[in-house]
Length: 232
Image (cartoon, rainbow, N blue to C red):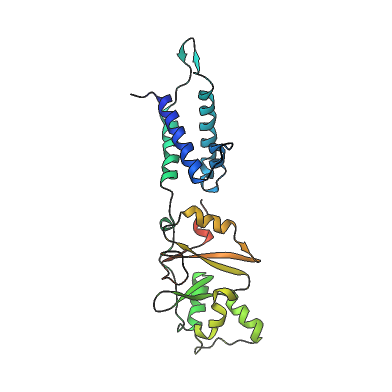
């Protein structure tokens, strides 16, 4: 039966191999340092650095005093290392966090009703879908302002529908925000990275639409917003 130090060393080797492959770590870079700097592993930073120090200590000698082992690796360290390795092998996917119960409308939705629901439920962005559940655009506060900037005076009567604002709900016509698409089986860290680098041409990424393959002409399966990833 392997001793705790041998088990620890084997796990450290496995850890380093996984990190080097996943993050394309160069030979002169440290795998432990590399992973501890990844935002999705931030909560493990102290654990990773402690494991690195123990590994380095064991690597520079047998760590014995008068022929007896001076270091013992306890079960907590082994289990924590296994937990991190498990996440490297099976990272959480978009499907583990995306929102499927969405409030959506179509082009025939009455504008008055839509705005009332948005106000009552504190919803800032509402996807507009066609009959095949594909994205037509997004109705938001910016939609009203965009139309107002062109028409100067706007009316929101009972007869007005979302289709009367179709020009302004198109993704490319949002002046200060933009939207992107991501495939359902993408790693959740990829979604987080998109939000972290969210400024594009002075526009901020506010929502990711989840589809089967991350293409905009596919059925919308769900959404992700920065709020859904706050604890990462």
